[in-house]
Image 1 (cartoon, rainbow, N blue to C red):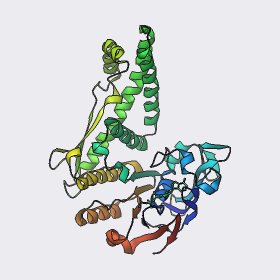
Image 2: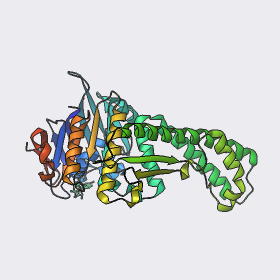
Image 3: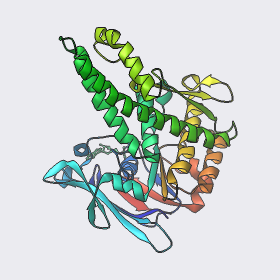
Image 4: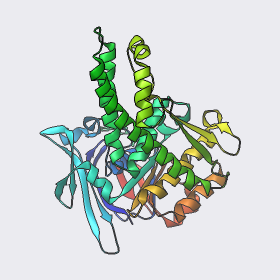
Length: 361
Ligand SMILES: Nc1ncnc2c1ncn2[C@@H]1O[C@H](COP(=O)(O)OP(=O)(O)OP(=O)(O)O)[C@@H](O)[C@H]1O
């Protein structure tokens, strides 16, 4: 199975945890605060990025580790082939993430060449009612998983945007030639950023089109680009808007203001107005569709934190059926095994308690 022989050393409340014998379905069971989500977070650090809590590295280090932590796992890439993945921090630079692939130093981005990790956590339950910026961040994370260059376009755009905002907020009249040049950089990064977002939405929509409206509450996704998506349109828009933006002291249009709109297809109802369970079902539909796209030949891993909580038995059964058919290894958490009855006989089950993990089935 994709990941196995996982170790966590001084990672949050796990002093020295080892998980051996992972299966397709892996269930982490334990009381609130036992350390189940911490295991998922550790696994999420085997992908590029900041992990599923987006927490600072120093926060993840357990108290006994002198401010450092380490995570390692064996990734099965073929019948007999394995790769050793590791990440963590070191005493001389606790704020810098170190990555090792087969024992050699590597960049965090290189982890993405080996496997695709996706996740769904309770913190994402409010995504549809959250700010547009939280949804853009979500969309960008999905896009980066499909195409790592998306992250570069986002940072290029954001750096140029900060520079334009600094000029606009300045007391002195900005030099139009300098603005021209910054807007050209913004347009290049911004158009690529918008194209990446549109691309991931088109791919997800195509994957979701095969899904029946129920029981997964099929979502309709649209990207609303207020300032246009071509570099020329964006440049023209910013040039036109200079006076207005200067009065506001910041750039009012562009990809940093775009929206991801989500509707529940069967009801044509904005996702934010759907029930908690319906919203969860839509997020699951997106997560599963994305996992199918992201894997693209690489082993896939899905981290589903408390996913059964809001689902009725019909939706839960349908979820397990789809996860069973999917190629991704699945890690699930729960406070009890009852909601997972459908998969118990095929799952590896771990009891988590006070930062320790013991395989019980
Ligand atoms: N850096 C750290 N060092 C030690 N313990 C930590 C650290 N960070 C978090 N913890 C502890 O980890 C525990 C939370 O673990 P986690 O979020 O994995 O719980 P959980 O089993 O998923 O619980 P729930 O069912 O409530 O979601 C808390 O008790 C918290 O105090």
